[in-house]
Each structure stands twice: as C-alpha cells, then as structure tokens.
Image (cartoon, rainbow, N blue to C red; front, side, top):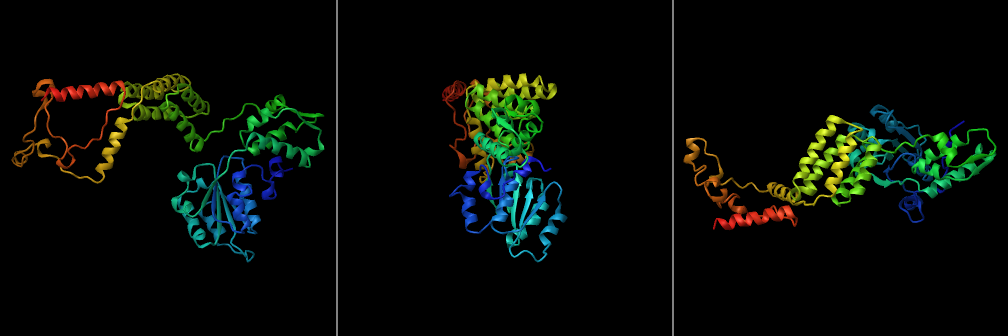
Length: 416
C-alpha cells in the first residue's frame, strides 16, 4: 500500500492546503492558470510543503504533459533525452519538472536554456535553497520565482483531519483526536512529515486509536531539527544572530547561537562570523572586541564541541554588550569605491628613493620624518593633490573614538 502522504496527494489545485499567497482568489498563480498560460518557474521552499505536487497540478490545470526528472538521478544525457523526445502526443509544449534543481551543475542547467528560450518546454524547477545562489543567472532570468511557505499549525491540523476523514484506510478506524500539539510541533510546517507521523500513530490495532501528545511522541522519538547547512535556514539563523549582536540584544544573540549549535552547525563558521562582526559593527568603539573574537576562533578550532559552546556564548554576549561603531567599515568602503576610478600618482616626497636615479627624479625629497619633532608629529601632505581635503573616516560618537578625536585635534594644534 502506498504511504499516506502519497495517498493524500491533492488531485486538483482546489485541494491544495496552504500557499494562499500563490493560490488565493487573486493570487498570481491562480490568475495565470485562469488565463490558460503557464510560464517557466522555480518553486522555492522547504521540504514537504508541496512543490512537486503543485508543479504536477499546474501542468494538468493547463492541459500540458508532465515530465518529471530528479536532479539527484539525472544528468545531461537524461535531460537531453527528455528534451529531444517527441512521441507525437504533445499538442502543447510539455512541462519538464526538475526536482532539486540546485543539484544540477552549470552544464546541466545550461542544457535547459535553449528549450526554455524557444518555448519547446515549460520548465518548473523545485529547490529547497535560495535560487539567487543555487540557480544560474541565465536560467533564473527566464523563470518566475515563487516562494512556498511552511504550513501553519492550522493548515497542518486541517491536513490531519482531512486524512482521517477521507483516506480509505484511516476512515475505517476508530480514531479519536484529543490533542494535535505534539504532532504539529514535530511536523515543523512539513505536511509530508505530519502525515507520516499520523500514519505511524494509527498503525496499531488498538480501539480506539487516540491521537494525543503521548501517542505522537511515543512513535516519533526526538524531533529532528530542520536545518540545511547550505540552505536558507543556515543563512537565516546566522543573519538573525549577527543582527541581534549588532542590535545589542545579548539574549536574542544567545538564542540564535543555541539554535545553530543544537542543529549541528560548524562552531568555527559561527566564530568566523563573529570575528567579522567584531570589526564591522564594533570596530574602533572597542578594539578589544576583535582581539577577543579572533582568540575565540582559534580556541574553537583547537577545542571543538561541546566545550566550544562556552567560548562562543561568552564572545556573543561580550560583543552584544559592547559599544558599536561602523566608522572603520564605512571608511574602507568609501576608499575602495574611490579607488575603482581614481588613479592619482603617489606624491614624490612619499616615494622611497632607494637608488640614486630615483633620488635625482625627486623621490623622497621633502619628506618630513615625524619622530624628529615634538609629540612625534609634523603636518605634511599625504594624499595626492587631487584628493586634498577628502575624508574617508569620520570619528563616531562613542567614548573611544571621541577620545581619539580629541587627541588628534590636540596633536594638530600643538604643531601650530
């Protein structure tokens, strides 16, 4: 017998639970289908939320043949066979569906371009990863991209009740739904997982079959944290941690850090991002932050988990509670932007006249050695003539940088 999730696969677009932002009354996919038109598209979202089903139903809704491929098992050869085959049955271009399109390399993705461009096929790709990073720009530009959302708790509940009511096997059993909290929580928005759990709970011979938190956890065991180290969740969680530290919220920073560690994230990856943050977002407001973060990175690499969690927790809290400044970050970015177009020559007095010929050409002549003067400072020109007065670095309004600002002003005034 087929699994429950397969038996409950929707037969029409009206049967789909969730994705109302795409399939609602005035939603984009609904509007397109009503017009009898189906563009090439990429369906993006986590596992178990109906990407494959939606692609199949879209093909059927506009009367197109549906030709599925798996990026795991198919190569360029299989892809070209599908694109080149024609058994005379196709009055309209077929819908070629590629599951896990992010697993296709550049050559495999490029093999689709001509057929998509000429309209020989309508391409639908499904991916759990952000298409901006996993799909070639050439293919991406030829497709509409639609994001599918995880099912809400109410939608999971609707799915469960529908399965109990409509599935030919389950409808014969005496099933009492007492509490769906655990089943919904363990599903994590994944409809397929919800149905798999339901099938496990209902696989016994007891009468009645009671669905509550105890019965669900008894068959489910420990919930697996949904986390793909190369997917969106990976980037979303690290982004949340960084923004929490930047926003000086130590509690939120620790929470997102714990989420990543509990999911098995590489602690060295987290430590590297904290080093970057220490310079970008704290910078000169607290120069010790970079030293501590760099030390933590080396410590994490040498110690490893589970003890590395202690080091990462300390650094995350320290950075969150540190004063913030992005003045040095802004300064280097401004300078780099100007350097892309400005090629001003180095003033002669700043050049190193290491040979007699260079000295005769003026290299190093007129350079003032600051250590020969009081306070080790003497004013002179350091920027090219065309850039005199240009400011890249602006002192930020924190204690450390304001102290540096006061010192520089005193230094310049003392030389007058």
